[in-house]
Image (tube, rainbow, N blue to C red; front, side):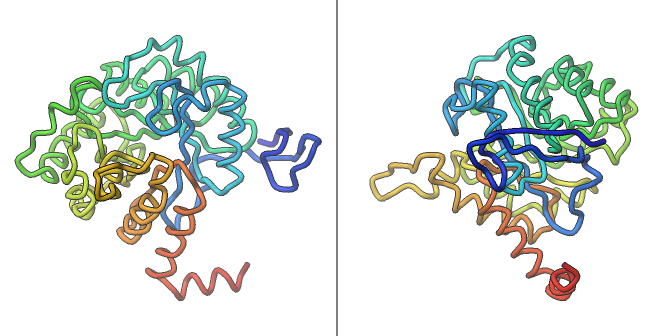
Length: 312
């Protein structure tokens, strides 16, 4: 379906007048299948760990989403509730007031959108706007209405491993073998959704880096990507700017860089994840990780990459 989209100063050939272009509304089926996908993050919150409320206003969030879209993001992930450790929960009405106008604008502009929500009512409201992906970080505490919704609508659903909530998850990072424990608990979650009628092709798994995971446990999960992929589902890696990267990059005095200064490390994780052929990486800054996954694609299959360039 085609529409006309206009936004000042966000696309190529920007200037003082709104850029008006004919756009085709894409779906997940239109995205590249020969490389790891790039999911760009838009936090429509007042207390994000990464950007501290910079995009709480709808206009600012839409502009940021379009910036990421035109920078090459395959998917724009829009969330209205911070899940940083200690964050206060918000009600679904507040969440919807924040994100639904943003989702609608981005869908109309031709972006593929995922909706970062733990609430079935918010997910259903977003699905009425378009063919969005539901990205649910609730993990073991998923809402009982969510499996039925995903089965009924046929939506693509990102099922993330998590224990507890934003106030308790840090105290629940107790594992015998973090890779095997996460694989087992993800399998249980996956089985619950399949039992509710969700089809296997609707599911994407996320190991939940930083969610009920402490320090080195995140690196163990990244090292164990092959084990997680052996579950037979696409895998999303969401490492961008997270605490374990800040710890890695701390200086000799122990001071950690600000989240926005962790993008180089994020891109390195994106490249290594792409070498493991993960389905996607979720990042705050597009270009470094997009370049990283394209380099990984060339590394894995240089002949195909050369042939693609010749066709272009």
